[in-house]
Image (cartoon, rainbow, N blue to C red; front, top):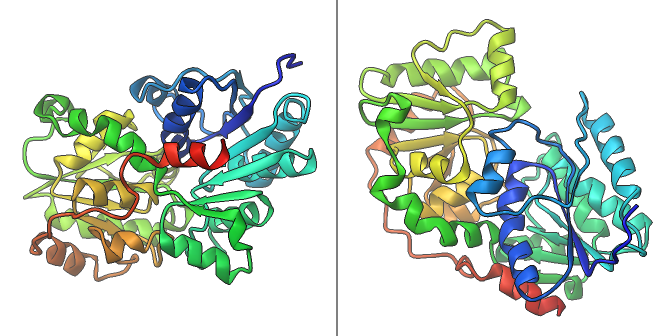
Amino acid sequence: MIKTKYDTAMIVGARPNFVKVAPLLSYYEDNNHNVLFVHTGQHWDKNMSEDIFRDIGLRAPDINLNIQADSMNKQLGCIISGLDDIINSKTTKSLFVFGDVTSTLAGAVVAKNNGIESYHVEAGLRSKNLHAPEERNRIMVDSICDKLFTPSKDAVQNLLKENIISDKISNVGNIMIDTLVKNHEVITSEGSFNQEEFNIDKEYFVLTIHRPVNLTDENLSIIFDGLKHYVNDYDIVIPAHPRLKKFIEKNNISTSSFKIINPQPYIKFLSLVYNSALCLTDSGGLQEETTYLNKKCLTLREETERPITVDLGTNKVIGVNKNIIDEINNSLNTKLQIYEGIDLWDGKTSERIYQELN
């Protein structure tokens, strides 16, 4: 039973959440606020979770619920039940949730049901694809949270189109960039990356895949077959999400042409990306990080909830189809314009959120 009453609570559960919570938690505590920091345990792989805390200077959670489940519905129910035991008006005045994972939705539901003010950081992103659980989470969370902090103007417009009142919306910028700005110098320094550590001996691509839509025989075959055209000239480095590893092992898929490595801590992973010739991904956050780092990115999805990375950044959404070789060739043969910055992607998002609420 929690005996201390906290000024606010911050709920995380997956790697992208950790990158987003770190600067805000630090800013609140630097300003003498008592923060209850809760990790649901949604991501339990050591490389996906524990190592990144140390890497970005994120303190240990006050509570780790260690919730693991074999289905999305079970996971959601277990996280809601676990949070319900610790989040109420006697323990905290308010609650922050981040991004679009199961823990985000669970936190918003518990706050609403227990009469706690809730704030969604990274609100308003929309892919228009309701088959994606992240999209469903985003819509539900935004509909019930009391304050919505958006990363870009297009996110504001998405919320207004859904008839959410403007008083609830604040465009504060991209909180992931706060963490990237803080670590940019070390990420881009020569000493942060050693090709030999990963057995890389030529130029290389970085590939990250974790979404269920791509973990099918058809889509993964298209992606892998396309990349095999480049193995004579490039190393293909795949920091393998546990979900991808499991699919490869279960289906006896040959990966001998590629360099499969474990998920990397934050700084080492972005150093790997920064020194690559090309990044291919189905991640959301990596579209933003490659934009800020001015690195070429091809998104292996049919849509993106981050269109600003296409309009003003270095990202191109190519889907998964037989044209993947043409898309890679076009990207390799295209010279990037120098990234000139996106409004409010300046490392001060946490400060703006704090000022809005205090």
